[in-house]
Image 1 (cartoon, rainbow over the protein chains, first blue to last red):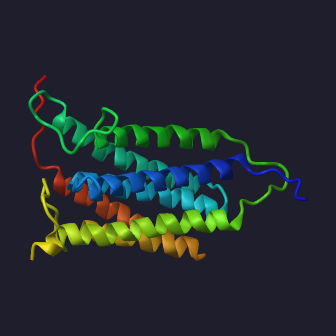
Image 2 (image 1 turned 90 degrees about the vertical axis):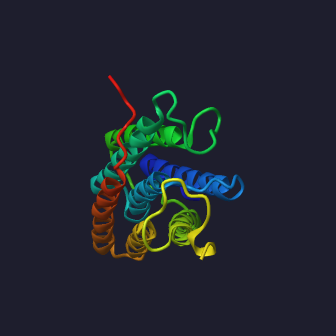
Length: 182
Length: 51
């Protein structure tokens, strides 16, 4: 029996990646089940989520490293800037909103909170001391499952974004898929 | 264009996961720069704020 302990930082990285995969799945559920097409800024927020996932994937593959956390912070700051811009577009009374709310908040507000949580979580992960004894690696199946789910969802976003927007830019308020309108 | 950014991010992930960390990070850097440029391109409407 393996008596070594899991590295808490590796475990939290895996949990974080699973959380982001869930977020991307919720975005797809809203897009397809709720018939809510993502706007250009919404797509950039998904891209930022994929960027944070890239940093987590690096930590899963190579072990936690400061440079991977730096990538996560950069992606989260970018996502926060995009979400913040979208909040400011709709914050004044009479400026409307985009999409349907989820639990009382719009997706871009949730997104802003998510990126703030990523920054806070990354700061906490950077504070954790490195283990001084050999650690028990995470199960390979879990590592591969999470990594390929993140890769697959990012690739799927490339496909569905192309179907929606085509090779150029998405309209600000998309109402149909570019590929099916031609 | 946005689909290209997702494609670059996918390539970065695949490269890194298959053992080429340096190439993965390089592709991520390209995607990051292009993403900021694309975001800047979309920031055109004035905000309806009046302080």
